[in-house]
Image 1 (cartoon, rainbow, N blue to C red):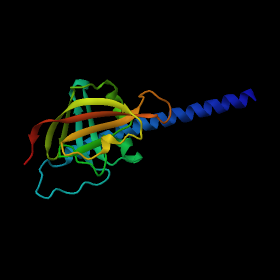
Image 2 (cartoon, rainbow, N blue to C red; image 1 turned 180 degrees about the vertical axis):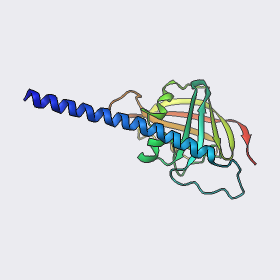
Image 3 (tube, rainbow, N blue to C red; image 1 turned 90 degrees about the horizontal axis):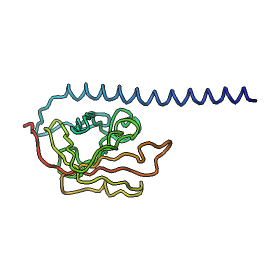
Image 4 (cartoon, helix red, strand yellow; image 1 turned 90 degrees about the vertical axis):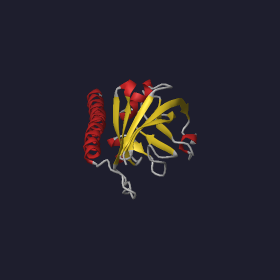
Length: 189
């Protein structure tokens, strides 16, 4: 019985290590692919910009104080969130008027948000240009609180991830970063 139990525990441990390694590798290769796609996209915006499709790389997000650079993909399902933080369909694109919502996993891409604070700069580069957002607030809310998802007439950005950052299993709360447009760094015409 002891021998069987030890084999079961070793098997379970191996599976957990494999799943963790898979998540880390998928996130790394997903960001590499997203970066390649983003850098190959022309920065010229025409009067009629092409539609954004699920899985497209839509922006590059930088947080200078935290030395972070992430590529944002369109979509918020599991496949896209493994590649990188996902822009929530139906919300404004980064840099556009309205509320832009970006979600990401706390144990890969958005782990860096644990160190973000009020006043930090967030730079978003899109095909339309580069936009500077400034963090107004951070909050911890229950999953039922959807205030960060509501439309806005102002140009705002919400970054959302699960909370606590170090938690085994499905986290019970959400960590929300709220930022507002502080300026336009550059604009492509």
